[in-house]
Every structure is written in C-alpha cells, then in structure tokens.
Amino acid sequence: MSPRVIRPFRSATLICSVALAACGDTGSLTVATVGGGDAASVRFVNATGSNLDLAQNGVVTAANANIAPGTTVGCLAVDPAAASITVRVTGTTTDLSGFPASFTTGGRATVVAYIGPSSTIQFISIPLAFTPLPARSGLRVFNGSAALSLVDVYATLPNAALGTPNVSSLVFGAASDPFNASAGSTQVRLTNAGTTTVLFDAGTQVLEAGKSYTLVVSSATPAILVPDC
Image (cartoon, rainbow, N blue to C red; front, side, top):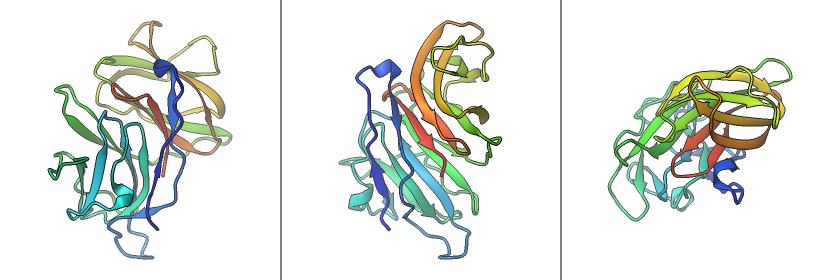
C-alpha cells in the first residue's frame, strides 16, 4: 500500500497552533523481508519551510513527492540495514546529506527534517520505544527552533499553573526523553530554561491514553504533534 501524506489542520495563530499528524496506513519503500518482522517502521516529518521529496534508490514516486512543510509521511516499512532512502528539495535532483542510512531491526523511529543553525536542512532520527503507564499518554518534545536555544517543557491541563517542568534544559537540535503525560486535553508550553517565562505555547491538543507522541517544535512551521508508529 502506498504511504499516505497527511495534511494536518493549522490554526490561524502560529505561535499556538499544533499540526496533528494522524496515524496513516503503513506505507512501503524498501521492505526488508515481507512477513519476516525485521522491517523498521519509520515516519518522516517535514519541519522545514520547503517542500521535500522522498526518493528510494533515486526514484521519487507521486506518493512521496511534494511533502509540504508541517506535514508527514508514515509509517514506512524500510529495510533496517539499507533503507536506500534519500531526501531532496522538491524540483531538484540533489540528495540532502544527513538522512539516516540505517535503522534498528524491528524498531520504530520518527525522522524529522528541520532547519539547522546555518539555515541548512538537517535530520534527526528519534527512536520510539516507550510504553506509557496505564491510562496515561507518552510524550517527548523535539526542539527544532534555533530561537529556542535552551528551554524547559511543561505539559499541563489547559491554562493550569506551570508547576514543575517535565523536561529541563532541552537544547536546540535534541529530542527529550519520553515522559508520561495526562491523557486528554494537554497544553504544552516551553519556557526559558530555569524560569517560568513562556517562549512558546503549543496550545492544547488531545493525547490518547496508551499512545505516545512526539511534539516537533520548529522555526519554520507550526508545532507538529506526531503519533508514534
């Protein structure tokens, strides 16, 4: 089955908007061993300001072309040892450097394209291996905004006091460890590290109990809430 490009909702207010990428049907790029259970499951997130293409062995299919900023492709079954996947800016034939060359056998990952400190497109592969506590949700945050160089992360009930940070001193270009969050409506706010000065409010989103997510914060797009594969 071809992977499905998911174009999430964006609110009118950029600083408080969250793009929710719903779980799509499992796609297939380079399948490892059909039925063998060794394929890696990979979701790709475009948190840059450019449309991107995914290529397999140099070939871009219609389903993997023109991936718009703030959207995802997932979940792809790929050969963990030789994924043969590259990424290009739409309209070019030059592969961008830095896309992961391999993945963990039978593992799951979210790969994010984001704008690096020199305005170039960079990639991070975030491993997904977290089971939330009963009746809770799992959440991790990726800081892909150079303007948010060092932040604390708070996940609370909507409009609640900040309290104690769920994540402290998250640096630009890094993903936090996953943590248990309340299922249901949850507001995520990022503050200047060590203070309660809110630098970014990702607004309120609904987390489903028993599921885990990555919140991708980017300098080029609204925040993107990405379910784990």
